[in-house]
Length: 256
Image 1 (cartoon, rainbow, N blue to C red):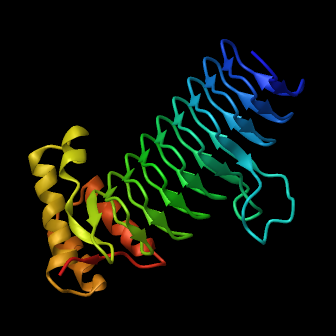
Image 2 (cartoon, rainbow, N blue to C red; image 1 turned 90 degrees about the vertical axis):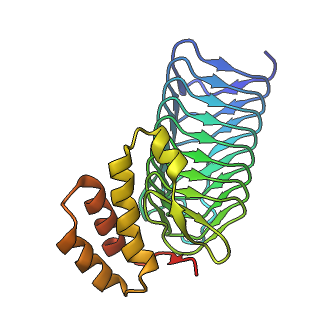
């Protein structure tokens, strides 16, 4: 190894590989069995879990690209079993939330940027060259295809899939496929749901719920009231209702 700069105060776990020309600052923790490639910069306030792979050129824990940031001490917290590919940049938090958080088991592809105070759940796939602005929330098992741009404060629901080159300016509800321009509901994320073990009766339930929301031309309040009155209470039904009621940006529209 050549020219590796590791501050003596950094905490490095067991069996951690660190590549050439990588810099690790003082207030950094890296868990056991992680692999850090060459030319990586891991900056103060970064916490990386176990079994993570960070590829060449990544910059983790950089200063937020936000004018309200005034130098407060904040963090980037990355869970276990994550893959961070080449030249990914993930900024730490601001005084807004104090942390940027990446869950477990995520794949973040090359050249992606994740802004300050974001929350990325577990088992997500974030495609190449995706731009995620500050304070975005991405639910578990979401799949965001390459070259997508996501507006600040947006919320991406769990088990959803967003097609490539999309522009996300409204919230994307869970379990759906979002595509076209402007971004619209294009059915359920059938492939993803089947891979996760969702059975036919559950998929049919979700399909009927979203038919009322997106295809019957009702306003959102009436659609949700109808769903609550006519559908048996299930975990998935309640997740959809709660997501839409909490949305402050509004949800994407149905394709027409």
